[in-house]
Length: 285
Image (cartoon, rainbow, N blue to C red; front, side, top):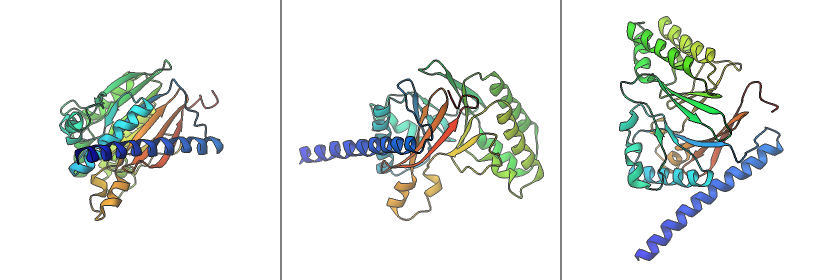
């Protein structure tokens, strides 16, 4: 009986790995045939972005094991967590218990640290700056409609961190869609803070904003891309467990000298969406 159970587990894990591998590679062929510039190279950097929050144990286990298989297949170098709980998030805490071979660095927010950056050297000689912002506290203050000293201090801190960033690619990680206020009927001061946040990121060359709780923004096509990480909280209202699995998942990123490709993968191992960001001035290189 134990042998049968063990064999079934191995079969399921291999099947998930095969599904993702086939999905991504058929996706590459399709993208190449449509001339979108998806040219994966041996020196490309791969990493994973995932949201935190509560998940039933069986779904959390399935997510971590799928992440493990994808990381092994594409030689991912690290994991970025968008969770507002930072190092205390359940998914991060259970990582080593559930998936002992997913021994990758996890980068996430740190309570009380404000904005900070992780500088990653890439295989092809360039570098990537991953900037974390405590958007949770900013969002709460924006909702109150008051512009206070703490909010101004956080924006100044973000400016300082981005000004020091010198990576070829620069992404900002947050758990909240701050740009929503630029399109809403919220307080004018809140809109002003959202616009300031956006202006700062554009000024200092941010290529992408990765958010956990939605991606409504007022950025135009000349600024940067905003991508939402599949997460448990956004589909908590769904009653069908299979639908939850279709909506939950993670992002696999592939970074090269000239492009930043993001694949949205659900718990079934399917690639649900592909986003490509071109590095300005390097499109034809």
